[in-house]
Amino acid sequence: MCDENLCETLIKDDEINENDDNKNPLENLCEDFKKDKDDIENIYNMHKLEYIEELFELIKEEDIKFQRVKLEFGYDNMNTSEILRKIFPCINEIIHKFEIIGHIAHLNFCDKLESCKKIIAEIILDKNKSIKTVINKKDILNNTHRTFNIELLAGENNYVTQLKENNIRVKLNYELIYWNSKLKKERDRIYNLVKDNSIIIDVFGGVGIFSLSLSKKSCLCFSNDINEHAYKYMNINISMNKNKNILTYNMDGREFLEKLFNLKIFSKNNNVLTLYINDQNQKNISLDVLNSKNHIITGNDKNKSKNKNKNENKNENKNENKNENKNENKKDIQNNNMCEKENNISDRKCPYIHNNNNQRNITCDNNNNNNNMNVSGNNSIHQYTDMYEHKFKYQKIGEENMDNSKNEENHKIDINLNIYEDIHILMNLPQTALEFLNVFKKYKKEKNDELRNVFIHCYYFAKPEFFYEHAEKNILLHFNQLPKDIKITEVI
Image 1 (spheres, helix red, strand yellow):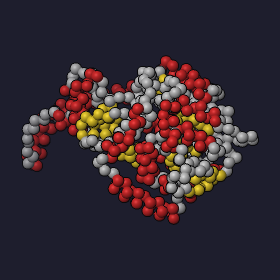
Image 2: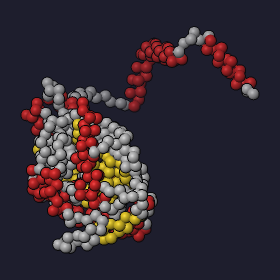
Image 3: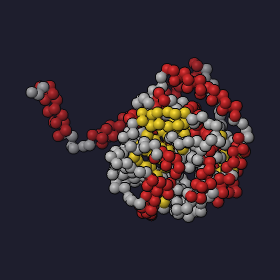
Image 4: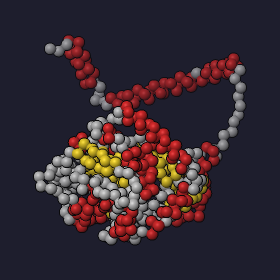
């Protein structure tokens, strides 16, 4: 049954529409607005003198005084971009966008601006009160730790900085550790892709940002980096953010993966993971957290972690001093000798994902922030692996014996693997990560062994015209087979 009033309304509306000359309702609205506007203007013009008289009467009553002010549009009223365009009107490539890392502004100058880079830096420093240091990158990232020679252009000679990303506090020494704020979108993409209660293996972890982010999803995280300075700040950041589900390592990436293979965490048949951890990891984790599905800290654990964090923060503040950059820079000079040759390959960057359950996805990402990087050749990774072998053989994952010369106490822990599901292996070292794929051939699957879903995110650089070809060629070269399902995502 149809309501009578409703039926009547519908009929009336139909009659109106038929007699409306088929006009668009939006056109009618615009016409009405124009009419109203014209009417208002006409009314104002008719009574203009009356309005002025009323205004003067009000000024007299309120004793309002007039003052003539001359406004000058100058340096103080202009932003950085406007000032630079005024000073250098003939140069189109003037820098008005730059990367900010905490209190540091990072610029990349072209040859045309070489003579005026100091002036530009001083303007950026003066117009941006949060910036205390302005630097220029003197060369490309071509060494093991992906660090570069810094040229101080203006401000403080201080490269230890702090920043925030997605409410995660990050501390680092920008002179000694690689960091790229522009990769936040990629980190967010990985975060959205990973499910809760996954196992994260970050082979080239840097200061630990991937693990710090994914730990929020109740993941069991293994974060590694070959750079001892990155490892140091990785642990500092875990303490600052009060994470209790991240294990950290300072090892060569290949050895790190091989050690994890021996733990059988890829197998669904393995219910308990037994680890022997050092004192640092004893501070980093809580067994109550790791063995709970939601990673909830109990009351006792909260009190313990609070006391630990207070003591650690006090020690950190005491140890931080002005000479930190100089001392760490001396140690890092040796690493700069292990460089790879340039092939002027543009900055396409691609992570690969593949699944060990006969269903493999590969994600290839594109980043336009790094130029002239070399990804070809099989020998580059071996140039430094042997040099660091003696250093990493004493760090322990699993049940292997430590060297007797080390007096470091080991702590045995058991983690319930039934809580965790998929495994995500992050290999964010675009220059050489593809060469690490052959390490997965060393994984030995036992009979009747059911594997977890394993995703490998492997980043690389490639020329745009050889984007897919480069991926397939290097996967076949180092992995000896192509995944059945390849998914490629460009990240700009």
